[in-house]
Each structure stands twice: as structure tokens, then as C-alpha cells.
Length: 282
Image (cartoon, rainbow, N blue to C red; front, side, top):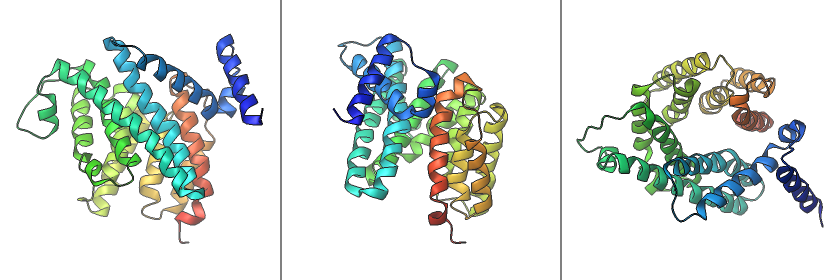
């Protein structure tokens, strides 16, 4: 049995025993959490009928796993073996499309005209605060599918849906989940081709400041997103490095609620910093 096989067995034993040392989770987040997500998703998909709470859970799990682990892996593979990267991105795409379907079904069950509303038909829906969860994770699923598709025109035309879902959620509770909606808007606005450079920077900066304020600077996500979508794009090298080094210096154990997302963001920040010379001309 090779090293990876032995390590997998060790991780499985740790999960079964219920004893997962914090050091291992921090040092090997992809390995530990990959097994957790795969197990949870497989278990839920085996069921013939899912309860409302189980469907919600599956929606979130599929998006988190595809975004936080599979697409992260694909990004690194593209630099080494493009075809392997495409295969890995395809795995994420499949999960994210399934998440889109789940989120759409949940909201359509409550609002039969939801899909017409989402397609920019002249329809008004009065969502409630309980719907923010689905609106957010469905927006993330659409955004992830666009990214995983690697420029598929059919997916690119879904982009306005991401903005519509996030804006609907923001109207209900802008502070939801400590600024998660504002953080998501950073990535969405960065895709807008109709904004001038100054307008884009100003708009994204506004969302960045709001997200950072609501999380008390404890969420690494906005820093990585801004660095990658704005600082890199407009060649602000010193700001790019400053934000990512700030993330690298964060104590991921300081805030339990943000721990997993901060581990993932920190790993991405470390990887992005290794690419600095490729991203910047000076």
C-alpha cells in the first residue's frame, strides 16, 4: 500500500473514532474535509426522498465541496496537466449543476413562478428572510458552474441570475452571515464588463469594506477575492501581496464559524503568492 493509501486509511480511522486532532485538520484540510464531504454527499444521495432540511444540506455541501476543494485542485492541475485539470473541473461542474437543480426546486416549491422571475420575466416575488439561504447558495452554484465550465457560452449567459439572486438576498438582510452576501458581490461585480475601470474598483471596494466590517476582518474571503479580482487585474502588486500576506498571517482557529472557509482561503492565498511573478509585469 502506497503512502496515499496508508494516509487514507489513517484518516478514515480518525473519522470513525470521532477523534480528529486539530493539527491534522489544519495541516491537511483538503484530505480531511474531502472525505467528510464525499461521505455526506453520498449518504444523502442514496436516499429516495429528502426532507426539506436534507435538501438544504445537500445544496450547501455540493457547492462547498465543488468550490472549496475540487475547483481549487483543478486550478493547480491546469498549470501541470491541462487535460487532468479539465477532468477535475468537470467533476466540480457536475456537482454544481446538481446544486443548481436542488436550489431551484426548493424555491420553486415555495414560489411556483420562481424560474420565470429568475429569467427576468416581469414577475415580482416577495421573498422572506428564510429564503436568503437558498438565494445565496443557488447564486454560488450558478457562479461555480460558470467557473467550472471554462467559458461555456451556455453557462456564461446565466451570469445575470447570480446578480439577481444576490441582490434579492441583500434586500432582505444585507448583514446576513456576517457579510457573506457582500463578499459574494465582490466576485460577481468583477465579472461585469459594462463598468469602467474606476466604477468597477469603486463598487467592489464598497462591497469589500462592508464585508470586512461585518466580519470584523475575521473572514479571509473578501481579502483573497479582492486581491485576485481587482489587485491582480489592475496590476496593484503591492496591494495584492499585502492582502494575501494578511490572510496568511490569520489565526484560522480564532473564529470557529469561519474556520473552514478561512483554511481554504489561506491555502489559496499561499498558492496565489507563488504565482506573483506570473501575474505582474513589474
